[in-house]
Amino acid sequence: MFIMPTKFANQDTLCHLESDYNNGAHEAVLQHLIATNDERTQSYGDDRFSEHARQLIREACEAPDAQIWFLAGGTQTNATIIDCALQPYEGVLCPETAHINVHEAGAVEFTGHKVIALPSHKGKLDVGDLQAWLSAYFADETAEHMVRPGMVYLTFPTELGTLYTANELRSLRDVCQEYGLLLYIDGARLAYGLAASKDVTLPMLARLSDIFYIGGTKCGALCGEAVVFPGGNAPGHMLSRIKRHGALLAKSRVVGVQFEALFQPAGDTSLYLSIGRHAVSLAMRLRRLFVEQMGYRPFIDSPTNQQFYVIPNDDLGLLRRHIGFEVWCPVDRGHTACRFVTSWATSEGEIEELERKALNP
Image 1: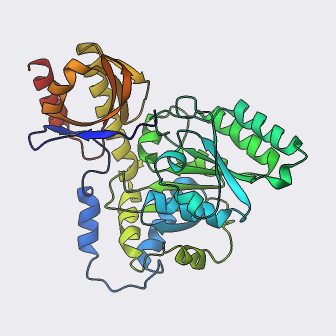
Image 2: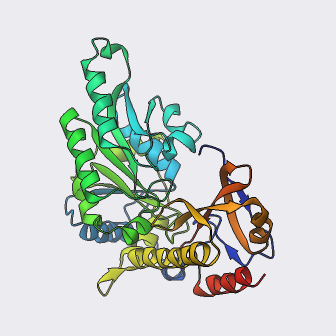
Image 3: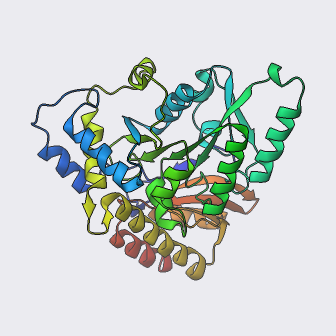
C-alpha cells in the first residue's frame, strides 16, 4: 500500500485518469479570474473577493462565526495549520495511510511535530484503536517523557477513496473531546467526498471538526485551499503565523476569486458541489465498465472519484494505450492494483470513447 504510485500515460491517451489535479481550472473559475483581473485591491486577503468568498463559505457551512484563510496547496496547508494549532511538544494522530504520514515528505515533522500513525482500516481511523491508544498513553506514568497527542487528523474522503459515515465522525469527535484533542479534517478532495456521502454534509463537518479545509486544487481551482475554523477559535495572530511559515499569499485574491466562483449559489447548489457530483457520476460509470463489462474486481470499494481495481498484468498494456492511470501496488504475481481518478475535468465524451476502445480493442 505504501509503494509510490507510478503514472502511465502517453500522447495518444484518450482519457487521463492519473489524478484530479492534472488540468487547469474550471471554465467558470477562469472566467471569473479574467473578469476581475483589472481591479486593484488590497493584498494579503483583505480584498473584497476574498471577503465575499469567506461569507459564501460561512453560509454554505452554516457557521456564521467561522474564520477562514486561503492558502496555496494541501501540503503547505497541513504543515502550517497543524504547527499553528499545536503546542511545540504535541504530535498529531492519524491512520498510517494518511497523506501527512506517507506522501508529504515529512513536512509536518519538519515543523517539529511527530506524526503518530495508528492502524488504517481501508484508509480510515477506527474509533476503538484511537480510544485504546489514548487510554494507554494517559495511563502511562512516563507519559510526560513522550510526545503528547494534541490533534487527530482525518481526510474526507480518505487516501483510498473511502468515506467516514456521520456516526463514525461523531464517535471520533467524542473521543477527541474526552481527551481534549483537536479534530482536523483534510478536505483536499472534499467536493467528491460530499457528492458520494449518504449522510455527511458541509454543515455537519463544520459542527464536528475544530478545523478543516475545503480543497480547491483538486476540485476545479488552479490552486488554493480554504482553511476553516468553524467556531471562530483560531489561534491568535494567524496572519503572522501563516506568514512565518512562508504560506501567506500577497495576491491572496487569486485564491479568493476562485472560491468566490466555486461557492457562488446556483439554484439549490454551488459550482463546488456540482463539480463533485459530476466526477463521482463518471467514476460510477467507470466502475460499471471495469466490473460489469470487463470483469475486474475492486481493490478498494470506493464510492468516490478515486477508483482502485485489480488488473491482470496481461491487460496493463492494453489499458496504457487508452488511459492515463497509476499503478498502485502489486497484488500477486499475475495482478496489479491500479488507481483511476475522475475529476471536474473528466468529460462524458472521454468515458464514452474509453468504453468503445476498451470493449472493442
